[in-house]
Length: 110
Length: 267
Ligand SMILES: [Zn+2]
Image 1 (tube, rainbow over the protein chains, first blue to last red):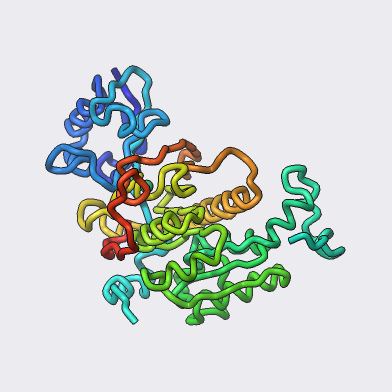
Image 2 (cartoon, rainbow over the protein chains, first blue to last red):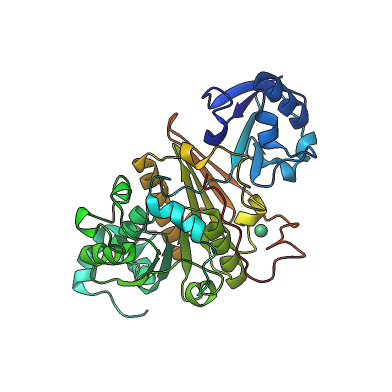
């Protein structure tokens, strides 16, 4: 059951730069296990200690948020596409010096 | 609102007016509209230029920072002469130079739980181009509470995300991401970076989405989520429904007043 998995930029360090990988599983839970076998360290980026999908990450099967399907029990078939999508928020590069300063001075109260 | 367009306006906006979906009626709507842009950076720059050029009557621009040389790689509102100047003022000058018919309101401040309600309630749509999660969550929360549409964008390296939030009608930012990522679990800030033109794509999409919302044209925007991956050159648009369990816009909301999310490593 090869399923195509889209890997977001922040996790590509673990997939050796690959933006798309192939993995197997009859459901999302098995798929994550297979991803971990292929790319050790990937699982803990996607799920927490309790095995739940992390709160700042969304997993989409084809065009559906798996939370509105059956979550990790969402079944997969040949040719499905899984997208792993974390929240991203960079508008300024970290080298922009004000940026670090702002992180430290927060919270601002006047 | 009912005022006829001037001769000059008809010439300036001729390419809008000729579109049946816009027309004179639509252009008058834009001239009467008020949009707030949070962040005069890589996303806010193209968004501001297009909104000003489109004749959005009132454009608020909010940013606490001054122009730094490293900004000019992508923040096309600002120039060498603006170094060390507050971004909101170079933004204002640039927008007014393009279109003196628009009113630009600069807010040289950081969005906070204190100033968000009074500022945001003045606007018909809010564009978030901020570079940090606390501001994104604050824009989302305040817009949902006030019932204002919001267009939130995020960029990183070669990736972009666009979220269109129509309060109570589709997923809000918190339906999707219940809280900001904690530090350490994702690659450090040092690995971040952004190709300038990627910011240009997403900021332009924000302006486009805001204009569509103001005109009421196109696919219903509620819960629209767009992902852009520049390296393969792929766009993907999906629609996500409101999460009934959302702490903010769900059936039994737990968040009933604005709160500041902790500052974390910016992804
Ligand atoms: Zn929500």
